[in-house]
Length: 180
Image (cartoon, rainbow, N blue to C red; front, top):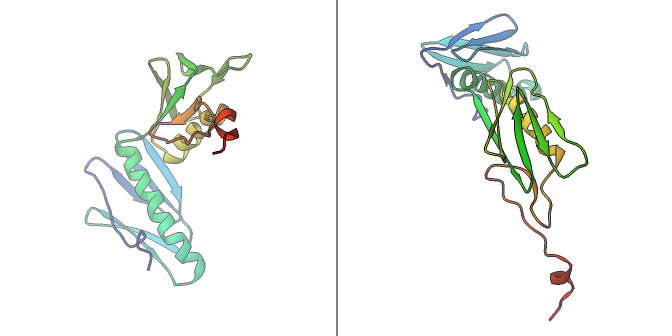
């Protein structure tokens, strides 16, 4: 039995869950999200909780059991609280221009980042970007796209990194050439 899949999902008071024949619809104060559900997985609501169950112990239903439960739990969290991914820009600058974010990342040109649907970008100071939205997958994808523009350098640590990410710096040429 899937440890994740068998756990019930608590439904907050201001969240409404509707289950169709092949999809789950979750509405909350932040918005609404839909998720398709495989035919071997059943989702039911009972006494303020969501239960995800599988039809058999075959390989496919077992692999989809925990996944479906995690996706539905993320939908409930997203429409209730939303998700935020914070990026720190080290050694470069960033500024807000309307919905877009202009990033000066050491290239000859300015990198303009446009938010994807359902995601908002907010700049704090001149080196922190907050990516916010209700869909965890879209928030993560947008943050990864921004980080991909200038990943952290292995020698100086300059670049775009997630808040709290530890960068292991390599020693420079002078430190690597010395031997005792």
